Image (cartoon, rainbow, N blue to C red; front, side, top):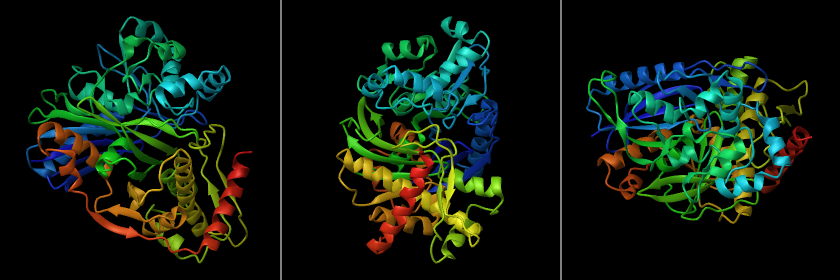
Length: 488
């Protein structure tokens, strides 16, 4: 039996077919255009996303040449799509999680004292990263949108919800707790949309999707999309899907995903731990009506910093070159990058911050910039781990890593040094897609239980810390100095 995962990310869309041993047997991927209409604004064309999703899904199914038992969907979270319920057409480009256009609104709400209520109900902070203020912006800036929303003519969803709608031919308007829980509109304790929050952000309830368990039958694909109708049986936001794909089912287990951004999640079990260190409390997954929670730290720029070096500065041709470039240097030359290109996430939450490179000399070269971009990922991961420990989490026995950047051996070793913790990389680093496949497979009998899923996890390599404490302290002191300058 085989399961297909649709992994709709920030810069690309992919489809992967997995067998019962959780091994990928076919993959298809397409990058799509990023739109930056103003500084700090980031948009995607939902039609690009839909066309790519359909294309890669068909390609992967064709390449696998096997029947597909179910489809699982995982997605970039917080990104907002509003569409016409009758035609299915979006009323505006998707506003991406990286977008900062509503920073002023968030600052105003925070000054008005709203953040305590928001955090108590949603586990989140007031930041333009999340969906509610983006959604309100669409309603207030697209002609007639608010009136149409109040009449029930429009639908809102994150990317998972939009794809589910399109895949089912407009029959199913639903999402899951991991995506609903990132909107600032969903009470993660009562597991329902919250009237007080809807009033706070002025969002008509008629826009909202139904919220279902992460694993279960959401619907079947519409006639004509594929050779046969396929059940859609699992959905989760990308970071929670990665936690699930890494088999972090026990409280205290930690994973960190390195893609466009970096996201570290610690499983906290049935307890929704309230952070006092500006981390996020978020649903990890909901199975059979029982919710498991996580503490999350969000870094907005990880791989995106390398992409900027490649596409913006032209200092490298491929992201993979950074491993060799970093390794060729005996040290970092005192060069640090604080990648605040779209603000800084946890634990700072400074949407006004911007990128900074410190310590440049006439001896600095492209390799120093490449190394600084990789080091910044590790420093920020360390900052998240320290915040989690301060919130009461035990230091993890190991950090499980995944995502495209986890293929970089130099980065994984440097992570182990800065974390002072072993770093474990699984055989397959595309655990976000695997998590979506697991959720769909659980619902359709491909796998009988989470224990069966955990048995498929296989270690590729374990990176042990070996750096001297003096050297680690020197590097961290340089990072903290650069960070202070970026936060001025």
